[in-house]
Length: 86
Image (cartoon, rainbow, N blue to C red; front, top):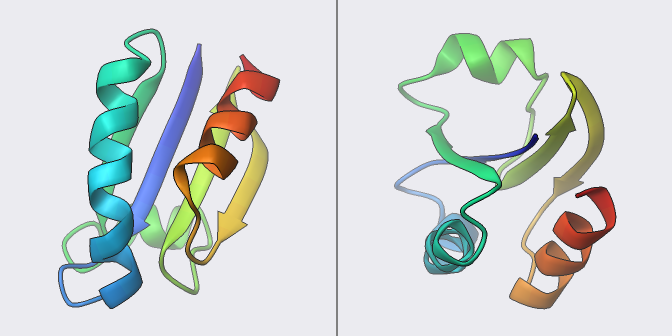
């Protein structure tokens, strides 16, 4: 199963713009586990995945990081990554 982890924070402007896209994708791809992770409250996960900048979206398949996207992204970019990794 493909997992998509969206690392963000409430105070981050680009993260706020990305948030509704992540919500839409979670509805459009019920077969993909999509999670939002707040870097301020989930410090251990942030360290574990070596997230140094937000927003960061990590794509994991079979417990292996397949792609890490740092910075803002539009919906089409994320959809293309999901489709290529499914």
